[in-house]
Image 1: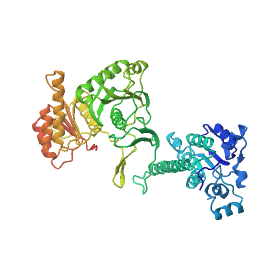
Image 2: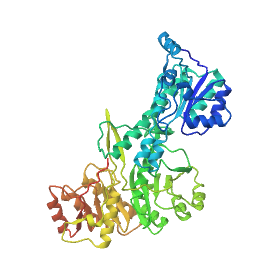
Image 3: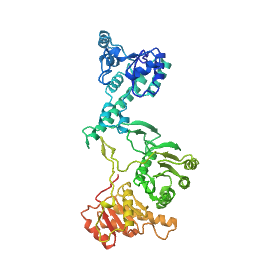
Image 4: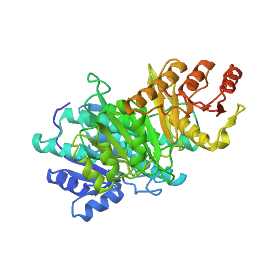
Length: 528
């Protein structure tokens, strides 16, 4: 197996023709004979470059609406033959099979077709068969063939050929690894789509794939390696965001920003502006308001200490007033659907602050898949897109909640959905008053949220914490009345929880004794 393989013959068949003519000219300039298919052949020939149609190689015309073009021994033999093996060499000579030194194939745009919302038959027709077969064959035979699946690969091949007189073994190995990953991701997209079409919740095989978007400096901690991959899911957020300014995004930035943006999307921007401030994937303040500046001010008031160095997500277009308020404290990231020029100008004065414009809000009720690794495998589940409305609530106490309390109860429960369990959230007038996250016992989460609210009141010089007269939300049922009594001590007058404990009766009696209004949702929102 030689290190350097001169490029004498190349096969090109591309769906995305970006840079095609430049690459074809460069290959021809190196003295390579070009073979191509269908539209790729027409494009190269129209540019005045000598190119042979693959049908003249195979002796068969393109047929069946293009489904059959390259599935032939004279194509695959030229890609798979081990040239230093006598038996392979004899077969090539006997059957007039000429070797290929370069294969450049990018695949039918299946992922883009699905993302565009095409119907079933159109998606099926955009499943490439011959392309992946050629790519895998060339990649398997990396000892002799350099395989390219995108323009960047071709640029590397041409650069290698110009400096070395051919492709190096190291480059061919690297491109082979990438090629196998590309076909694996392509097949993963197809299998996932097919499972969705068949409404299979747990297919026998689950494949995952992604394209590298960014190599990260490190992971959660400096000793961990990390990278950010795109799956092709059509969902607004960190994957779609344009970074307008600021330092490179870190692993923790991306994780926290995703959490913040998913939370803020729970609130309809047509009804009000919403702001969520996140620290370590947990909210430290959430609020809605008539304007962004109002919502931000109220969200910050919940826990201004924890907000320092946090992530801010907003549901509407950023304006100057909100931007000026947000730059008064140190913030890592601000993400929004859009921003006006005045807001961008304000943020530009904080050069390290990362400003992301996502282009829209994620749909909080759209179905999608979430994945978490475990030793030896991974867990897959539907995204928690459950939502409750007033019609879903069951009043279980003697006192019924007022319209204002109902509004706060639903607001608090939507926030609690995005707080690490055990989660307890106090809210009043469309703003969080205290948030207790990630405690091993629910009573501790309720106590933490109350103490946070008391600290905020002391820092702001208020006579009473915001929890007085608040709604209290729990992501899961109160197993005992002691957690509920923390809400009473905080000053809450209404409670929302899933219900379902064997001690529901005891908890309801405690609520009645404290003259609370309490509703059950029947829906739990654990978050781990």
